[in-house]
Length: 324
Image: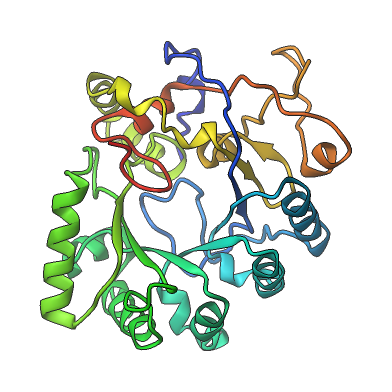
């Protein structure tokens, strides 16, 4: 696979500094039951990286000490980590909001048949990937048969109260099926609700639009098709200064499956570790949760690259959807 990493630095993206941290986003591993074309994690069924119980306990200790508001779990399919339920249960005991970034089809897997019920019992917010409300577009991104499975999983979640009970939030995620920006989030959400409701009786709370980043699997596709330069120009031409204040990297810490710390999930996939306080720019030592628990501190400066334009273009993009 072609790699865009050498093209992302240096950058003229404006410098960023950290504000108050409210969210710990944790990647539990790259194992997944799907292999999607837009996946910036390169997750799939053959990946073996999984967070250990030792690192999971460090996550919980960090949450306890810093009293963060949100634990955002991602992967791969985070539910496939053997310590997933332990982490969720303990975090909920701390009265922390837990978000499960779910690909939906995992909920129908025979080995995970009780996962949906577990999530409902714990009051976990589900943020589920559904690239479109039509079979054709979903199949192009995620494979044949995935759309029907996703619909069945959403109906299962609705039956448990998700999207209906205010305590059981169900959000869907849209990623463009190509090298273009997402449409307006508000209008697309209305389209999703109309189509999924009328055709399948599905209800959900919100739609989140997320711009595809020119890194990893999607970045490799752009390079292979000769579209990388045009896509980066599209992002830069559509930068909106109003999105700078709400960028997720300013209030989020990203943790990989080994416990190393990054400024965002995208930097994590690039291997660009967060800076430690007092470290010079050339210092390649990676900070870990264990380091932070031992007293090391994150620097205020956030590590940036050309891909950061993806978060500021158009309506903006974050793990919580559009910024403006």
